[in-house]
Length: 221
Image (cartoon, rainbow, N blue to C red; front, side, top):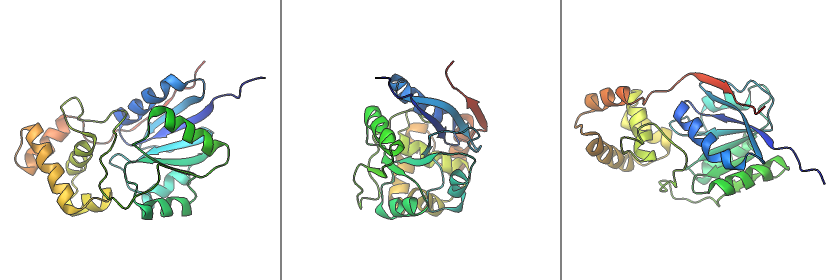
C-alpha cells in the first residue's frame, strides 16, 4: 500500500524566530508534514493543505486583521495555534471558518495528529477548552527574547510593549486580565534589568522584539 504524501503546510506569524521554531518542532515528522512556506507579515502565496496561524503577539481571531489569513489565496484549512483557549475565541474561530483550534499544551506529535485529523475533514479543538483566561503555556518552539531568559508569555508582553501598546491594549490583545499583564511585566522587567517602560522599549528594540517581514518557500527537493 502506497503511503499518503505528507500534508503541505504553511506557517504564519509576524516573527521569523517563531515560525522557524515551529518549523523545527515539526521537522521530526517530515514523513507526515511538509512545511512548504513560512511567512511573517505576508499572506500565504502557495496552494497548501493547511495554514497554521501562531498567535504569538498577533491579533486574536476576533479581530479584523485575522480575516486576511482566511482570505489569502489557497490557504487550505486554517488552524489556530495558541495558548488562548477561551471558549469565546474558539467559537469565533470556528464561526469564521477555521477548521482547528489547537492549544500550545499539546506535544509536537499531538499537533501533527491534530493537523492530520483536520486534513481528513474533522473540525478539531485540542485540548478541550477552558474558562481559564490565563493558562500557563507549554511553550514549544521558539520566541524572541528566549535566549535572554524570557518565558513565552513574558516575551509576548514585551513585544507588544515594544510595539507601543498600552497595558489595556495588551490585555485586550492577549485575553489576559490587566493584573496578569502587570505581573508578566514585573517578572519580565526583572529579567531584563529595566525599571521603566522607555527602557523596556529600548531593550525590546535591541533584542529583536519587533515583527519581521519575510517569506520563504521551503518545499523539499
